[in-house]
Length: 493
Image 1 (cartoon, one colour):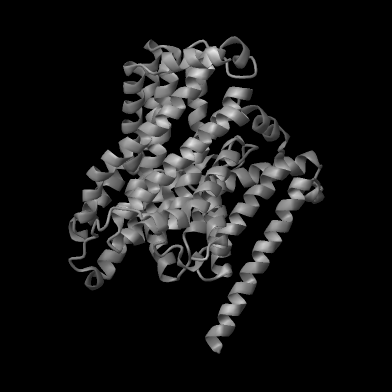
Image 2 (image 1 turned 135 degrees about the vertical axis):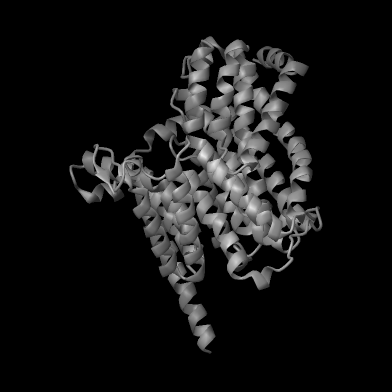
């Protein structure tokens, strides 16, 4: 085994492979930082170029693009509150307020450190825990999936904003919009137009909900933002700030590794789950959403922590962990590699090379992030009066470029107005977004669970895992209600 690892190390550590991974990381970060340009798009566009490459370098290029785009989404999320990717939406909750406070450099650095640590831990989990986690993922059925998603949604609704009721209203609204389009059995819901039959895409809803309300605030409350420009401020994250966030980074990395190993969940749900847990347990939980570094640490460590873990079911079982690894499955097949248990017997050298290459990519992500961060950080110095129209054009162009659809542009604008109204009514946006993203998974697993039990709802609490999540849901709701009651009593006193 030692000989195999040494051989794989020598094969990977060539300037050609390092250059390929560096290009993938850089390209992924840049694409991820552009609103509307997703990691899926980056990997898909790069796929034809891998046809003429050796198997391992081609897979490493796609993995590097995936990792780079996941981190890159945090750059625009922090600087202009326009998440480049869905998994960075949670980062915007604290990153943008920090940028407004003149701490954009500090926020970007914390996002980079958390992403690199989460990515490295995720790679280690892939190397050492691929088989056990894959077996565990196989034992998680529809009832367990449903309760896990419900717990994540309840946690986010409970800790977002100042009211559990408003958080639940926001989540229910997100679930409602998530049902638009065709269901699992071919029926159409809210299909008022032909475009609605395909449902609402995540990108226009995401960008409309987070970016456009900021532009509307600038127009409506112009006096409050007159000549105001975010300052880059102090770049460094102090040792005390990093150590205060280390617990959330390690926990977020673990959450990302576990949830990423379960097919269908992905980085977005992991980020919100980690963010909710960090807010619930942190001594600075009340400052989350107002510019808390620990919030960025929790989000970024989880979404990058899920990247390597999504490769676990792909390599061990041949089942893609998310959409991007689904594209990678095609790349494996084109290169003559068949993911699954036999891969570790027939192509063990290639597996070791892939593992080592992914560890190298974590180091490259750090250096690429440092360089890209300095370049993009100048965005924070642009006055809001100039930045607003540029952001609007970028959003419109980015959304239209995805599918050349004016319907998506209309959704973008409508969600922008909706997000602004939610801001005026003090309704938190985070529960809406996470509900919209995981809504289809909630519905799918609920239907499958009820189909298995022939309509018996007790199947939702029929196993130890589902019982644990049910207890946690009750605890979260109970603790949130108690917290709000104590706050109300203190205000009256």
